[in-house]
Length: 232
Image (tube, rainbow, N blue to C red):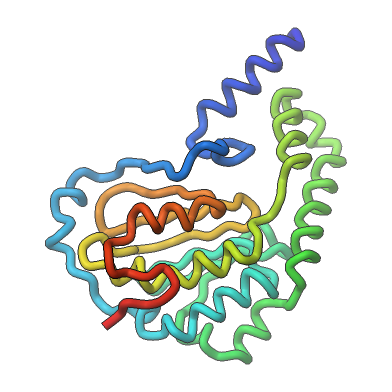
């Protein structure tokens, strides 16, 4: 295969994915993926109910910040509707763990379940993990096109800045308590730098962390503050 063809394949791969191996393009504020039309048609019939996450949200927001900024978690899923909280650790990156909202409010539980690690150290560990992967003989069996893509990503990769993580987390109660289109679940990944959100209408919203404030300004109804809670 020629070098020209390799380069052409790389560009095709990066264009084909909704979120590519190097993330969302710099010009994208958000991407919407349409889902089940029946959900769209019944949006206002499906009322929000108070889940275990809602009951503990004031205590959980600082816990979520602690997990992402000062402990081993690099990806966090919060299911408001079903009360499911999933985490992925830099120390065991191929597995997801599931936790109950009320247990996460216990400082002893958090200390036992999530080893402490500084944000800079956690990001360095992720770089080290990718470096080890690239040195494995099996990695070299991957097509050259993909090796080039992943090398480009490694060279350009930067973790989600800490202030973006804090801004995203503090907005969750507001997004959850919006009058009509309330938040059902959210995934925050400091590796990809992306926030994935599903509301009670159909589909999924994908927003880069750096554009999250802009997303809020465009989508929050008047009278809602991104820096506080409008819960009853």
